[in-house]
Length: 301
Image (tube, rainbow, N blue to C red; front, side, top):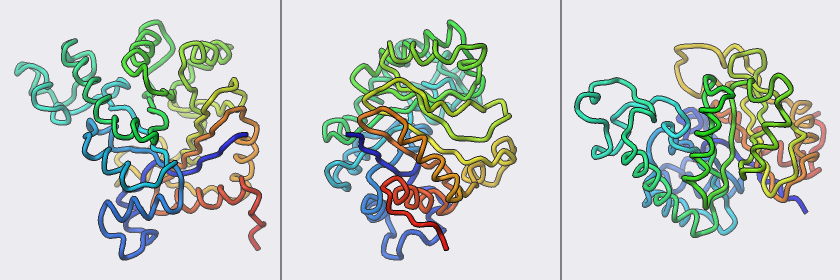
């Protein structure tokens, strides 16, 4: 039997907090998470992409949610070949003084000892979620410049080795992993190495566009991330907030189309995450999608 868990890619986005979705009494992080978890069984932790997670925070997340609640966790940005400010690293792991002045650094800029320690601290910080059975997948969302090639394949294997005890989901944003007849090869290779291919619904026709692949091999867990279909904001620069990039409302027809895709997946558990986290779009779409996937929805009238 397949279990479908539906949630959003954040529960703390500033535009969501100002949208009125949370009741007035949900004024602090604890009450907001408890309120969110009363409505959904799954959430994605976005903060771990921007900075290393802290064990005490993960412990609080586990304590504030009921048994069976699931957290998917985004991998720290350096692990996915994104740049980061040195200030996002613990002081003892920052590059030597000669490089400290650089505005951005990459994974390759760190000494091997520092890289290994970053992975260790990342793993250790997630222990409370892992031990409580609430850690779903660790999401590796790679950037548009992470293209198909031997060097990047080796980096994927390195990531899998560093998180051997966790389930890794991989989201590509470069079409070369699926072009030139490479789709089956990529999916097969991911399966052979225990990597979960993320099914993406997002704007098409951009550098960061990949096809929505609903015909993935059977697996324990399938992950679906819904970014909206707003091509204009997807490629825009200098947006007022990160949430503006995902400003898209899925109508009922689109949600039913997506539900059909989800139902076609062969997995024991399916994670469906709405990343259209502009104001309350994501939570409202997620709630409606749960009705549709459960067969409780009626046509809006």
